[in-house]
Length: 87
Image (tube, rainbow, N blue to C red; front, side, top):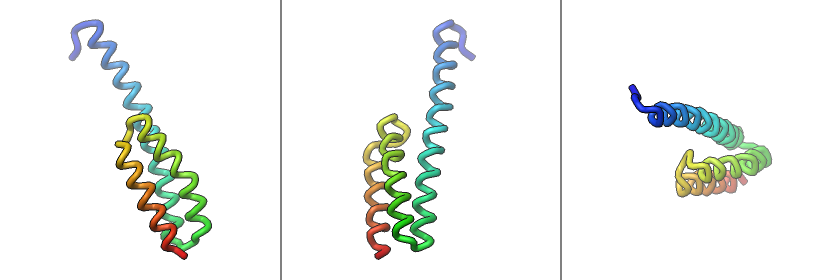
């Protein structure tokens, strides 16, 4: 357990940041799931629409440090490939 005042504050700050990051990660995963479902259903227009909505969320998660920048780019790229292949 923390003894100093600054260590106690650090614990509070970390707890807040963890909560915010959990929310961001959850939001991103929701959008990713919607893209996955649209691709699985085979509906190209729905998949394109879901990808358009998901892309900024994925990139925002990377910008905020929830996931790595390259991971975000890779996810978007692979989704775009899969959506394009639906034709």
